[in-house]
Image (cartoon, rainbow, N blue to C red; front, side, top):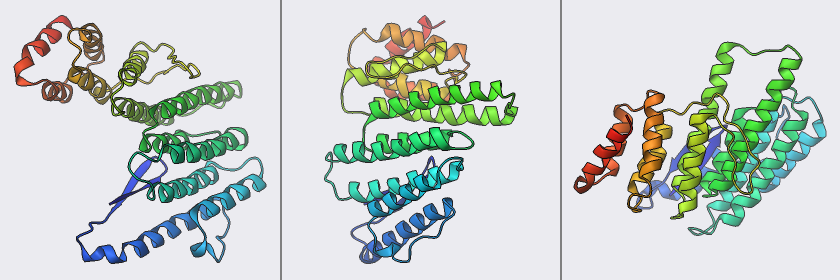
Length: 306
């Protein structure tokens, strides 16, 4: 069994094997880790956890933390909002662990909405504005529940909000350092790649892979990305890396649709050359995606990409 925890945009795992004697103590270890994580959520809000925390259900704790966050009002710091979202993530993990395989869609949507509710508060009340890490937490929740379109929607929400904040800072002549700007772009690219991976990993549905292709295309051309049901957004300055191309190209090569994907593949290969990403990593991924009996197709596609 694998239990997933999230610290901001990072994932942590605890594993237990049913054949091990350690499994007998695992629920207690899990409870201790969960309680420690929830205690830290309170610390992020600069308040002491209740004495009866260990007896409380994670969802009740998350409700309590969000109430405190609302009572603290405006001009709070990013850490406080992240703490509230982390508490909802703990509650989500607890509920998801009870569900059978494939039965967690409603739970994912339920807790995703709660975390987006905290994002609403952060967008309105955070003294430093929202952060990539905040959106990353929600994106991760949706992807872990295989809700890739919801994750894509939050990605767009992140981009539009960050653009708005950047415009507001420019009006106030409050620029960011070059290093901060670089790190922000790097964090955003990580989220794009996670959404791309989530889309191509979704259950067999051509529309998911098509959405991934169009998202990557928008990144390459720095053009507005639009999709039914989503607010359009612009991947500004987020240049795709070798991983971005590998995620989509590898999946397209595995598609058994004859020559229908050849033109889009040639386009992506040309873009990979343009961004100097057609390197050993990407070449290896493509070679692994194509069976030995069909290597000629890969060679032909590469020739057409010049």
